[in-house]
Each structure stands twice: as C-alpha cells, then as structure tokens.
Amino acid sequence: ATLRNGSSECYVKMPEIKFTKLFINGQFVDSVSEKTYETIDPRIGEVIARVAEGDKEDVDLAVKAARHAFDHGPWPRLSGCGRGRIMMKLADLIDENVEELAALDTIDAGKLFGSGKAIDIPQAAETLRYYAGAADKIHGEVLKMSRQLQGYTLREPIGVVGHIIPWNFPTTMFFMKVSPALAAGCTMIVKPAEQTPLTALYYAHLAKLAGIPDGVLNVVTGFGPTAGAAVASHMDVDKVSFTGSTEVGRLVMQAAATSNLKSVSLELGGKSPLLIFDDADADTAAELALLGNLYNKGEICVASSRVYVQEGIYDEFVNKLTEKAKAWVVGDPFDPAVRQGPQVDMEQFDKILSYIRHGTREGATLLTGGKRIGEKGYYIEPTVFTDVKEDMLIAKDEIFGPVMSLMKFKTVEEAIKRANDTRYGLAAGIVTKDINVANTVSRSIRAGTIWINCYFAFDKDCPFGGYKMSGFGRDCGMEGIYKYLHIKSVVTPIYNSPW
Ligand code: ADP
Image (cartoon, rainbow, N blue to C red; front, side, top):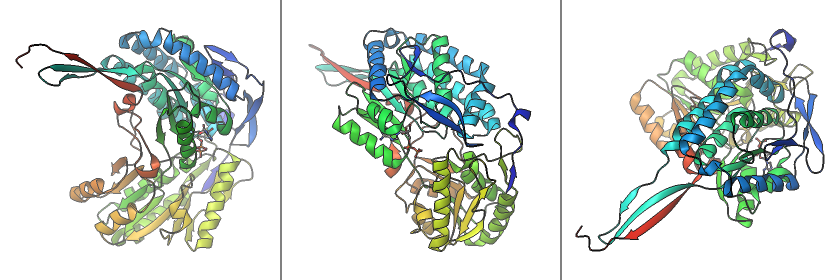
C-alpha cells in the first residue's frame, strides 16, 4: 500500500470546533464536575479540542429534562405530521452544512471526507426524511375478538430513550437511532462514543434551530463506564438502544436488568463471511472482498473478515486480491485519491497490530500488509492472511481493522457449514452467478443481512441487526420504529351482536 500524507489544507477548509459542551434541555452547558477530556485527530495523533466530560449527575439532569419533555411537553402530543415537518427541517439543515459536518467526522474519526460528504451525511438527512414521512403512519389494528368483544391496538411512544452509540459511524449511527425515536414521539439522551463527540453536538445545535423542543434531544458526551453506564442503569429511562461491542452490550443488558428492566435492543459485533463461488468473476470478487474489509479502515461491524473462496477460483482470486491490496492507497482521509484513512485511536491501532502478530504466531501466512505505515497517525497496511483455520483467534474475534482472513472450500454445503461456524450473525456476502446457489445459501446462513453480489449495500429502508451474539432488535426500515413504540390493547364488550 502507498501512504499519501499531504497537507489537508490543500483539499478542504478545516472546520472550526464550535460545540464542545453537553446539550441538556436545549442549552449547551458544562458538566456538573466541570471536567473535560481531549478528543484526538487520528491523522496526526494530536488534540483537536477538549469536550465536556459528562457523568452520572449530567445524565440525571438530561433524563430529568427528557422525562419532563415526554410527560408534559408538546413533542409526544404533536400530530405525526407536526413532528415530521420539524424533522424535515432538520434534514435540510444537515444538507446545508454537509461539508463542515463531513470534515468534523474526518478529523474526529479519520473517516474519508469524500464518503462522508457523498454518503454518510446526505444519507443521515434521508434517514430523517424517511422517518419524518413515517411519523403520521403509526397506527394499530382493529381486532374482532368474539361475538361479545371487540378490541383495538394503539401504538404509543415508549417514553425516554437512551441511545448509546459507537465511534465508527458517528453520523449514521446518530440518525439511525434518533430519527425513528423522534418520529415515534419519544424524548431521548444520546451518549456518543468518547472518541467522536463533535458531530453529535453539532446535530444538537441544528435540532434546536429546526424547532425540536427543549428536552426532547439531549446529548451527553463522556466515557462508557461512567456516562454510558448511567444511561443504561437509569431508573427513569424506558429503553436503551445500543450499538457497540458484544462485551459492552452484555453490560448494558445487565444494567437494564438490575435497574428498572428497561427495554433493550443491541446491535453488536460480527465476523461476517463472504462466500466466493467458482463461477464468480475473480476481479469483481477481489474488489468486493477488499471493500468488505477495508471500507472505513475495517472499522465496521459487518466487515467481511472471513473470506471463503471455492477451490476452482482460489488461485486467480488470490492473485487479483494481492495486486489490488498492494495498490490500495492509504493516507490522509481528506485526499480524494485515498481509500483508507487512519484507525480511530491508538488503542484500536495497537489492538489491530497485536491481532496481526497473533495471526502470524498461530501459523497463518501473511499474504500482504501487516505493518504500520508512516511514523505519525494510526495508519495500518491492508492486511491479508491465508492458511487461516476456524479455530485461530484471527478467524474468531472481531478485529475491527483492515485485516482479512482467507479460507478455501470445496462444496456449497461445506461453505454454509463453515460460514455458520461463528458466535456472531450480523451479515454475509455471496458472490455467484448461480441464482439457486445464491438463494439456498441466503436461506441457510444465520445472519441478519445477506448481500448477494454486493457488499455494504445499506439503506434506511432495509432492516438491520443481528442473529446470535450479534444482538437483537432491528434498526432502519419500519422495523426500526417499532422498538420505540409500545402496543396497547383496548377491549370493549359488544352487547347483543348477532355476529
Ligand atoms: P467499541 O468496541 O466499538 O469501542 P464499545 O462497545 O466499547 O465499542 O463502545 C460503544 C459505546 O458504548 C460507546 O459510546 C461507549 O462509550 C459505550 N460504553 C462503553 N462501556 C460502557 C458501559 N459499561 N456501559 C454503557 N456504555 C458503555
């Protein structure tokens, strides 16, 4: 891989950091402790800004504001259309600030500026619009229960929601969670990941400009074991929607169980298989495998980190893959020629390099990559291992970095069996021209999303979530809104009806 690390100023105007405080009840405020922490630019490993460090007391204040806005405020009582109109306005404000928002995610998370500007930020606005349009289509059913009884169901907002989100897609995650909850009429607290607080605070500012009433959307920046845990264990939070590691998901569920039994949905880790069959085009398959592992520098829960290749195409595939991986451009994520930026922080960077060392020690063969690039910033070479066995750590654990494991298989049955040999079940990819193979494998794999001849084909209307230890509950689509709604059954007797 080549490292390009020019000066970012030649590509884009660096954003000014305008919002660094907590957003509670419609105001930017310091944390109660007045503590702050540093957020780092992973391109250079230097401090961008100091951000308010929220803790339990701040979460208490935010929950109080959200509770008041739910119990007494206009938001849950507005018509769906009324909420939708305000959400549409917020979507327009996002579009108007697309460059600045994309640049903030780039300096905070090391994400490609071009993708942020063309995909993450505009899609966040589209997600808001989708749910704005859904807000007035939330309804129950009429149930003809018996001759003497008639019932109907009402869908009601679940109440105060806590969203705990990760750092890999700061904007996408924020709106994947916040948009359906807003449409449902809920009020909420967002706890962004400590690594990437900047856009979340900016969105709080835009929400106020759009007319979202005070207390409806609160943002508390801070660390997981303090601010995050306070959200998960709060007695007055009705639901927690979490995206992050399986390990922390377990803690969130425990906290919910031991506090008020709040409703929980979890979108957790993955070790997704990509199955490439003999009839595939080797060039396209290699491109998909690289995309599946290197997009967002591999910091993506649905990364196709286990690539299974059928024996007939294996050698050709490996040649194409090696060639393409070597030509892959790593460097400053503002540079339009770059396809892979730096890992989000030193901790992730060290963790990935240690998995790579472990892979070599376990006996896998390093086909390409494996090293740090440059001396500054958290850049890692696109890394491909061959001769990987299912019981190796690199084939079992989620690495969350640009590291791919290649494995060879003979038959369709074998591919299915090995693909399912994991504790995770988030996604899978299939590359074949044979429609029957594609359909059979799709039905047989225990995962929430199957991509046939594509990968990372996300959209706001497609439900997304896991099987097995990848979690439960779905984000996106109409499924994504139901978890923020209670169903209430109302039953009345009918007297003397002959029917
Ligand atoms: P990752 O492994 O992707 O960093 P984490 O699961 O550690 O993901 O973090 C995802 C989110 O969960 C972040 O906002 C983080 O601050 C939060 N978090 C971490 N630990 C806890 C915890 N004990 N309770 C609640 N939230 C937490």
